[in-house]
Image (cartoon, rainbow, N blue to C red; front, side, top):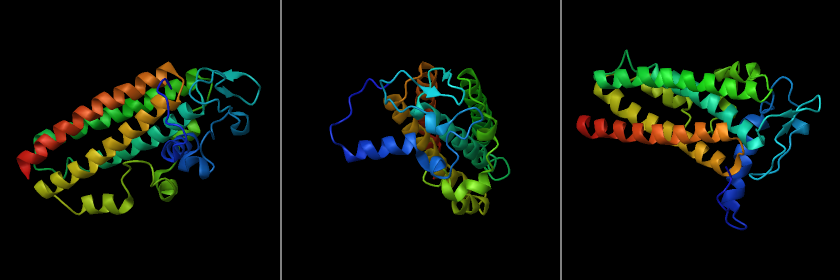
Length: 222
């Protein structure tokens, strides 16, 4: 983690780093809003830091730095958005392949949330408040999460059916996957946890493959 050298003085790198380590959820007062974790005490040693997060009782949370926790929180929200979008498919699609794909996505995203929960627990952090965030209550604050579908995009998909729905869903969901890949690539540069690195690598490999699969169907159905 963090082995790649960032370009000196790059405003773009600094902007992306700030997004992951503070994020829109942080600005809403939600990032690191995990029981037992003190945001003010969290260290930010960058990719090569070894201190990780310091909990409110002075003990150290295992292996997670600020970028790791920001990634896990944003990805949990991202996964929930993916489940919400994929749940639209069964009643609207014209293609069994897409219905089966949506079922597998929902299961994978649920497993991803469970994996995030385990990582936080293993680090000594309470994941409950993160996983209990109400999507509608904070949606306006987090629409800048890469790839996350906005309310108007979900409403548009709900208005469609058949092949028209299938094509527009693929466009939106491929972008959703691209957002998860972007977040994963960022935490590979800035995080320090081997477990988070493994999760991010899995996301990149799986979702790149699924984007190719979706656009193969797109070209067949358009």
